[in-house]
Structures are given as C-alpha cells and as structure tokens.
Amino acid sequence: MPNKVFIATSLDGFIAQADGDIAFLDTYPPQEEDMGYAEFMSGIDALVMGRKTFEKVMSFGIEWPYSKPVFVWTQSLQQLPENLPKNVSLISGNAESIHQKMNDAGLKNIYIDGGQTIQSFLQANLIDEITITTVPVLLGEGIGLFGKIDSMKQFKCCQTQLFKNGYVMNQFVKQ
Image (cartoon, rainbow, N blue to C red; front, top):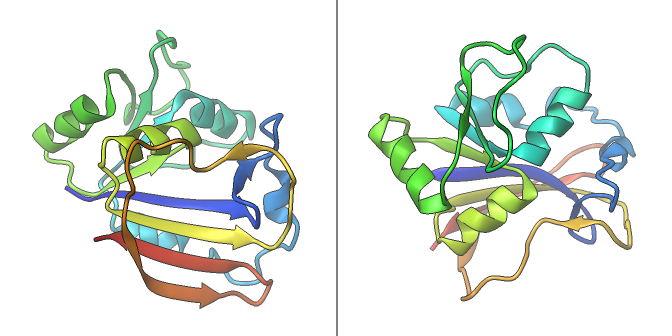
C-alpha cells in the first residue's frame, strides 16, 4: 500500500512559520491551475492528516475541501465538529497500526499530510513517495518538514517540474 506525501516547503525546508502561518505559500501566486494537486488527488483513496493540519484546514473558513475519506490522527481530539461530512473520522494509534487499519479497510493509496504525521510515517519507514513543491523564499525559521530519523531513508528523484511562478516540484520514490 503506497503512502504518499504532497506538500510545499520554503527554500530552507519549512512547511510553516514558527507560529504555524503558511501565508508564504502565496508569495508568488500559482500561474498554473493547481500545480499537480488534482492529478495527485485522483490517485488517492484516503487521507491521514494530523490534528494540527486538520485545525489549519478548519481555520480557512471554507467548505470542507476533501471528498475522499479523511482520517484525523489524534490522541487528544475526542470528537469532530458536527458540520463535517461523514467521510471524516478520528483515528489513533501509531503509524504502523494506522497503516494496517488503512490496508484492512482496502484503502491502498494514502495521502499522508502534516509535519508530525509525515515524520512519524517516515520514522516507521512507511512513506513510499514524496512530492515537494519548493516556494523560492527563505523563512529562516519555522516548522520543518523533516525531523530526526533513526536511519537513512533512500529516495530517488523521478520527476522535476518548474512552474512559471518559480516554484519547483520534485517527486521522489523510495528505493
């Protein structure tokens, strides 16, 4: 079952500023329609996102943007807001047990989203593909995409795309 990451970072590898603000993502507004997101999502069966990422999505004040099943990985959140669709649910456990739950449910292509969630799945060697779009801005500090890992993880770059706004998307697959 492939677990996939699709995320944007600053040039210095941050997914958000230290306070969680992600406004830097719009430094150079996309000139392409969605920079590969729709194509990526078309191959996804479900999403596993961390609680902080879920709360960030909820803070946008927009209609819930996902039609696919979304599992919010949390140890602290006890219930979801009532206005969310039925395809959103809470999940707990460690990365390995969540991976197994997805597999048991027949969900094969999983989008892993959120800094700590990605780091946990990487630590468990459960990330098969990483797509990183780099925004050409240096933040200097913030929330890093990658944390400490106990062993080297090898990936191979299989695709690079330069967008007109200066963003660069690199896709890596696990070796």
